[in-house]
Image (cartoon, rainbow, N blue to C red; front, top):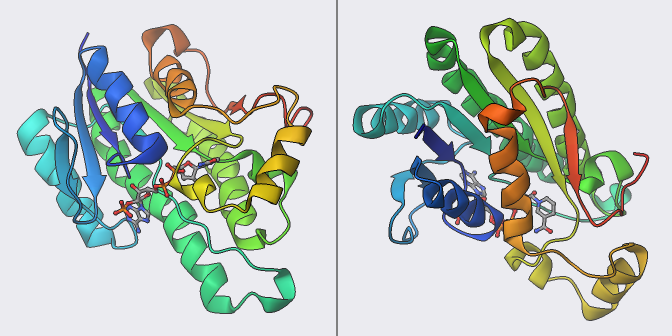
Length: 234
Ligand code: NDP
């Protein structure tokens, strides 16, 4: 059955691959962007997830055009890396406000309609760094670890209403976010990953479409790593 899907930050990178995977299986897919073009075949809606009223307006727009959001993929995220002693409050708060509070704003807005429909799927895009840690990433790791507690609390609150909330934790994926890493850092990462390579964005998308499917109805509060084995045991 075709569903209405909203992917935050679905205009590029991992979010775009996720949006395209849902579109390919026949779902109605909306993607948020912040003023850039949206690739053909996807329904674009402008939204900055750090602004609650913009989130509300984006959901209302999607509801009017495509119907209530049945699958939310909270994917939009940023990094602002620096070592703990150099990290300003502003740098810490900006990353939390986007990655963690932004996901909260979207999940809260989505859940009102999911409760009414007695069906919903929420997938948070975290990171291997959330549970593994990363030097220079105190803000980012805290934001991504927070998504696990959020998904598990939502599971406890809404689980009896056919609403699941799960976390996908990608390792290192070929996107603009990792393109800026120095080659020496990339080589270190590849050495540490049992799979011996970075992943393609559609390998993350496959995990997300599975968790949103009817087959995954009994999976909630889970953290599904897509990291080539990097974070095993974390
Ligand atoms: P990109 O940097 O390629 O894309 C980030 C996306 O988030 C863009 O669509 C961007 O929109 C959007 N975004 C950022 N801030 C906001 C905001 N305030 N409001 C709305 N949208 C916003 O990232 P990736 O595709 O690499 O990453 C996607 C997700 O996957 C992120 O949450 C990231 O943390 C996570 N991840 C990525 C990994 C990787 O190796 N790349 C590994 C593990 C996790 P705009 O185009 O308007 O800037």
